[in-house]
Length: 570
View 1 (cartoon, rainbow, N blue to C red):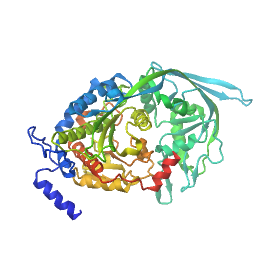
View 2: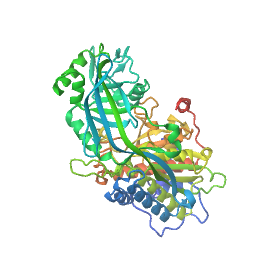
View 3: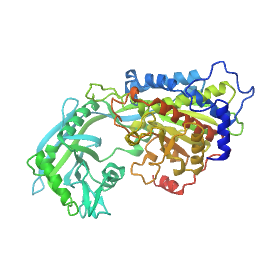
């Protein structure tokens, strides 16, 4: 630890300003100074206002059943927006949305699907087609296939069987070698094999990365047909998917709808029994046996035609919707710097009401995803508001930005970055947070709950990294886990939440994230599972990082050339 920082921390502790407290300030505490102060250490002391009691009380309301899962453009999201705007108004923060409100509205296009028809056909020697099965997915019926995404228009093509669909140069495996898959359905097993090479055990995990899917789609396929591990998995997902019929899906920003178009391909799951029939096998047991045989022959196996094809026909109509971002401002006090803005963000939408779980619960409350981040931003805003009440303000302005549409493809943050309330060149940094109230399995196993995954920081700006570490030292003192802070990480977390829409413009960012857990996108993501002590420490580190960035003498510079090159490619 830096000696100067060490003695500074001793001084702060002696003054009773430690960030580890959970008690609030007395309401009658006198102002620190009569004139407005921008002193960094005075601002940092207000992290004491970030308490577990505040976080628990607001997150309990925000993730209640009454919010209906906060799905973008649905009534629950509107209720959540009203709740947040009321809170920002009580804090006295400046509304900077449309027409002097807290709301920045944006239009969406979506598709409302009534049913999807699947026709499986055999291809005769003369090229004619005989339909061997026809099945329909709807609110009341299940088909031999489940549309997972894409396929908004009719998709047709022959079916190619590619086994596990592996492409691993190090192991000398390429199941697509010499096979033209353009315009065809690629059928593969969804579970992954373990491949023994000498004394080494390999597990090819490329299937779980976006890279695998992208590489297949770039070959111009009609689509992908995943064979699930068992019938129970297929039946569960098929039943769950019924709840989506009649609901808007495939949301896009209205102003980008023509630009982005609709995907010409489809990504589906196929019923194991249907896959066995297409492969000429007697049933699911024979299909499982084939899986085992393929592992033994994994290097020599190549994809081949099945003699069957599939036509997928969706019945849907386009609908127009509206959603809202929420924007509240704490104005800076430095006359030279107050026009520059630090954006502290979280997404407040979730996935709404869907298929019930085993308990019958159908409301996906999203307490952690991202109720935790949203209420964390609110708690940080409250700390800054309390500081201002006592005459202490940051040098730069801070924009508290709650975006919707994250679960639909980062739509709200994309809209903001294309229609910024404050100029991009005046946007100093983005501090983004998503899922900060749970301990992931890895850290549960190790017994370490005082951690946070950091994505960004030095991946884009060494200055941002330094400010983050200095802020964390003065606040939550969390272990900064950099596991996913890698431009080559297959999860690509650096572009999978709202910070990416700032980073693509060269705005330095840091993303606070606790990792994925077993209740992710399930009705069981409830407030009673939140670790509020961890959440409070994380929010204090977010707050302190925001203070450090807002009060720095200069903007953090983007100095990672590799990141700059990647943003040019996307």
